[in-house]
Length: 499
Ligand code: NAD
Image (cartoon, rainbow, N blue to C red; front, side, top):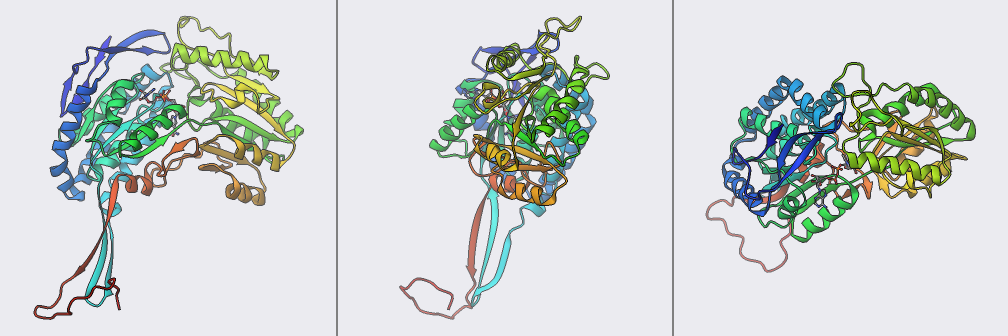
């Protein structure tokens, strides 16, 4: 059993709250760690450290901050095995999947290595006679990041490397359910040369989050998690004068057209529906089959593949799917499957009864597949966040598009088709932030930006890419004139214009 502390101003500390929480290994159901839960005084200390570190760090030339990012990237790579091990132990995903989590995060660090170029402003000579104008981007100040359990490497790395590369200082509050990997990433950042106070870690729950959201010394808040919490974060932080981006939950539909290659579509649904036991915000949880023949073709292909999924502890070889994260998540997902049956959906594959020998206390379940699901059923309406795929049958393409557009979430979606007209129309008309065309999980690469629409994102700026740079900087426009000495134009009370 290990203990996880905060790291404030470069120092590990248990803080002053006296409160701790348990961290479990979902494969065994055993408690593996205790995590300190911060109170307001601990958050105050982290903010004070971040404020003290800000002047020197923000004044450092971006090229030097970039060099720190290059070293950080190398250190993450060097420690990949250890980080993956931590993720698998506390989250449950397979080691290979954990390495994907780390790599997608590292790509944002690579993007942040280009910060001297990314911060370049614009310059216009002679906007008036002898007058030049330029824009510069400056850091926002003290930023905070609050992250979910499901990507313990990628999501913290979406936030703090780019923020500090832009010249801000940062407080990370990771999920209390999988806190080891984020804590190690903060240690590695220090090892790479990020000074004390520039990055601080506070572990905790609502108490720590509320202290961050209401703190006068915090200038910007990035959040990723479930929709009810994202909505709360957005309104509370905005009310307290902060810049906020709060990414929420999802219900991602994959529309399969009758002309699609059914084998390719099936493979895509298996990967996107059951990878990481369905606990990805970009997991496909709804397959919209256009036409009954498409529905039949998909269900008959999906069924044997789901039944053959290799399920077990993420550390074992040849495993495709691990457990879900907590006992509560396990119960919630099983309840939703029960409800789906009660509400009249056809349960084609039932993953509820799975017990693994030697892992009877782990939070395992098999993959489940529902057919004939309708929009009024709980298993369609709620974000399941587990290995459950539902098939909804749509009579035609327009019905499918309307269904996706009606859904309250707007994170990701995909269309599988060979028809370029349909694909183009879909990309144009669909009310969703990230769209895949024959790509089931269209997570943008680091130099593009990640973010949903509707109740999947509160605020207006997406994560990483140029939107990330904009979020973590403020633009300033400077207009300058250097009059020749002795030359006077006299005063004028009319609005200045460049005549
Ligand atoms: P969560 O909302 O329970 O927790 C996220 C963070 O908020 C954690 O750090 C947690 O400590 C904190 N928190 C929880 N309840 C709080 C409260 N009442 N007040 C203040 N802070 C609180 O989310 P989770 O279960 O860790 O993660 C899964 C959810 O995150 C899913 O809904 C998933 O779709 C979503 N998610 C979204 C994205 C995206 O990019 N849109 C990415 C990953 C995960």
